[in-house]
Image 1 (cartoon, rainbow, N blue to C red):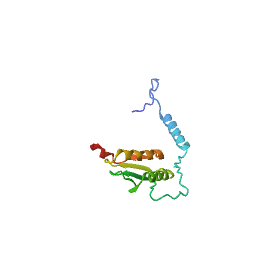
Image 2: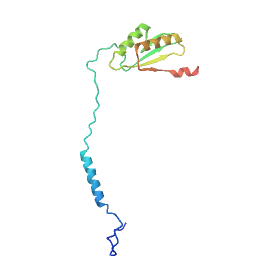
Image 3: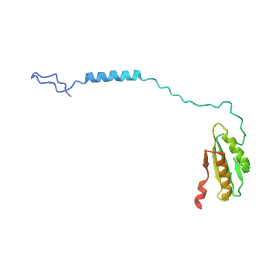
Length: 140
């Protein structure tokens, strides 16, 4: 684009001078950059203070309740009864962070046993419950 210096005819200049606009924009940009406060990123975490000792059979991250084909209930691989299950569930809920409870019934287990275990889990107030092994029911 050629810069015209005006003409001798007395005609007005048709192009706008944008240099002052660019100068003002640069000054405003620098002022905004200077006035923006420095961002401080902080993540607040409540760390446990002297966590109470827990029984070694309760994992603080995840626990697995399984029922085999004969109706035997296991907690992390160890056979238990419904009373012991109730006690383990209460102990796990007393932890600072509720561990995940994985429930895995066998496809051959009687529904009555599965229903009793699910009722105990519900009565205990477990909120983090996951079903494991649902793919075995796809063949029925």
